Image (cartoon, rainbow, N blue to C red; front, side, top):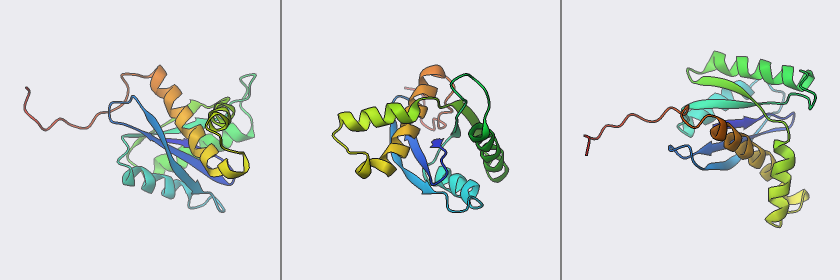
Length: 146
């Protein structure tokens, strides 16, 4: 499961168990932020996630700014409330890519705010999957070998 962290909403995306297709599934409202780590952990359980990827908004020049520090804190807070592995992953330009994809699909910015955040999470997850094709934990195979 991927999380595109924001100050108002966090986009959420998942992939199939083969790790081939990332799909946006919605957003989690941030509110005051105190309940966000538990909400992310609960969403991961609901979606049967094997791990959680948190978008890491490093500046374009590679420096760590306030948003990246906030993502680091969020990842630590999520780790504290779940047994799942939580990883940070560079999310530079995911929102721009998501906006381009939504424009291609004929969506206006006004009608696509929630979709943009979830789509950015799907872009993030797609990029992570592309760089880590063998890293996704797979469910145990309970069937006998064929």
